[in-house]
Length: 414
Ligand SMILES: Nc1ncnc2c1ncn2[C@@H]1O[C@H](COP(=O)(O)OP(=O)(O)OP(=O)(O)O)[C@@H](O)[C@H]1O
Ligand SMILES: [Mg+2]
Image (tube, rainbow, N blue to C red; front, side):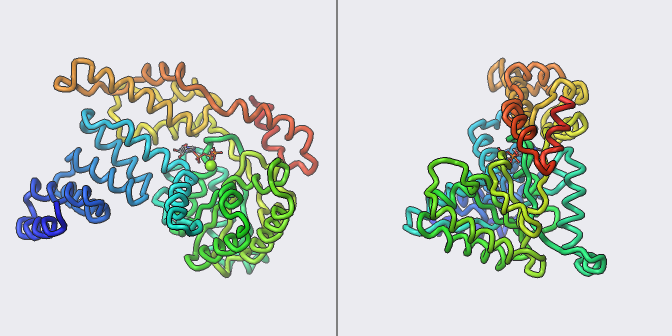
């Protein structure tokens, strides 16, 4: 379809706004022309008139994915397939999940594009749609973040009156898949802030020679889009304990990073810095001074209540029969949030396969049951154990100032 065809189709839709087949043609045409934002608007218009139109909801999912609104894309995808199992497209879902779960994946994509054009890496600025309501459990952490990040932004005067400095970064650490990145994005979403995410590995890998300049630009980008959260993933990559880092340039980069952090401290600029790492023991202690990453917080695997909440979140929009979520959650000790997501997916695939057993023409939705989820525990195993076995050493022998007390507590209960 040429642009002219699309224009005349749009004219027709304008004349006959209630004609859904026509609108569908326009939406598909726009999508094929890779005009995703416009296609999205058309799919949305169809859903406004026919809220249960599964193919149109799936169209939204595809377009939302393309424009980088991954959590919404996932929600739409699941809703569409919940309405019509025949629409399931595991590869699409996988792409959305991977893009949404791992900002690094997206940055890598952006980086690759930019490299093609022979330019440096531009950080992506987004306004996350996820909020604390999308994060299951972690109530204490949410409360800490409210007190230290969200309220100070809203009421700096109050904090000043109590002699509290506003600002200062927060470093989240813990086993993989337990929601560090997710929580940081949700913090931005909760407060309506921009979110600038950077993988430190990429700073090191890609910005050879000009890392300092790029690092400065990152902080500048955050300031320009303030109020914003500037999020550094894999902060430990700057720790210097890793082999293979060219020593001198690394040192200058760390120095630069520290002075940028000091400059960004204080919310007068409206830039809040958050970081995440799996290996806090590799993070240079200089990063932990007050005003830098002053708060170092443990993000544990979800407890029973957290698992119940996460399971409910992940099951949302899927065809559900009798599910005893608490019973399932009891069987999932030490599973991370990401593991729970995989588990629900595995169970869903099994139920979908069964729905399709008689062939796609005779497919009937077979809703998810407790047994499906319990059966999936055989295929999806908890992924946090390895982390704890290496963390045990550090928490025991490198705990001079008690910074890993929370880990020790957790290990004791384990
Ligand atoms: N508490 C939670 N509530 C809801 N979903 C969660 C939670 N924790 C993890 N998830 C799911 O798992 C995915 C992966 O989580 P996330 O990327 O935040 O983990 P991480 O702690 O940053 O892991 P890594 O150390 O590997 O970077 C999220 O996108 C989300 O779908
Ligand atoms: Mg992460």
